[in-house]
Image (cartoon, rainbow, N blue to C red; front, top):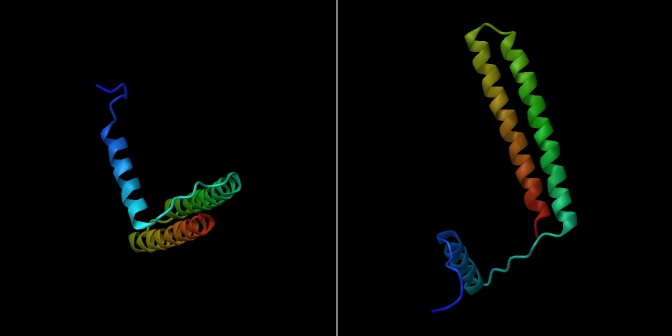
Length: 97
C-alpha cells in the first residue's frame, strides 16, 4: 500500500481537468502580483460604483409611490447594474494573461 493520503473528489476532478487542458495544449499561467493588485483595484472600484448605484436606487424607490414609476426605476437600475458588472468583468478579463 502507498503512503500517499487519499484525495478528495474535488482534487481528482481538478487533476482530470488539468490533464485535459494539457492534452489540448492549454497552458495556465499564474497571475503576477501586479495583475492581482490591478484586478483587486478594478473589483473594488466597480464594487463601490454598484453600492453607490444601489443606495441611489433605494432612495428613489423610497420617495416614489407610483407602481409604474417604481417598475421603470427598477428596470433602469437593473440595466445600469448589468452595465457596470459587464464593464468590470471585461476589464478583469483584459488584465488576465
